[in-house]
Length: 154
DNA sequence: GCCAACGTTGGC
DNA sequence: GCCAACGTTGGC
Image (cartoon, rainbow, N blue to C red; front, side, top):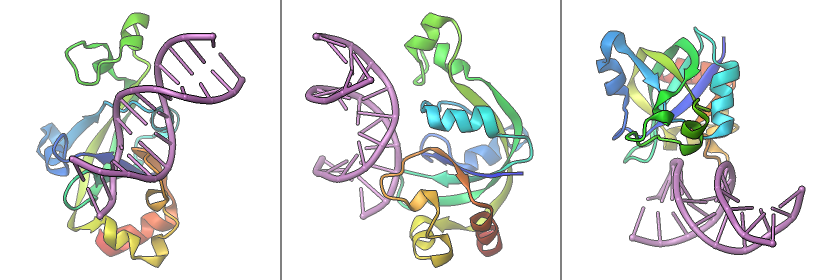
């Protein structure tokens, strides 16, 4: 089992939106970055755990933990001209080059693991999240870091 | 709203 | 295949 971190702008899709979804399962689409896609397509397995990270908001940080319940499948939003995630290249090719996965809410953190707390935690210093200029919206989380986060905030 | 870092695009 | 221009990300 692996650990991941996925970023979402809470205005667009938040932890509470996930919890409020049918069966607390949401589909994670709209990823439009090859590195992020490749993680989802090639490495995401059912049972993997995902740290749900709120980005571009007042208090960025990890809101809770979700579980991968459906592995990568074509992200159809790329083919929909009305979607904000529309991708002309995919549409012209007649097949989406992007993928989505389904995740299920597993545990909401009583208090979020804020970015500033994470940053001030020596044990988490090496997290990809904290590396300068790092913007990947889907990224692996080292098992040591994952265990630390779960122990402290989970 | 600013801006640095980074990815993508497209002309050559 | 290079690289400049452009767009996006995301913290502040």
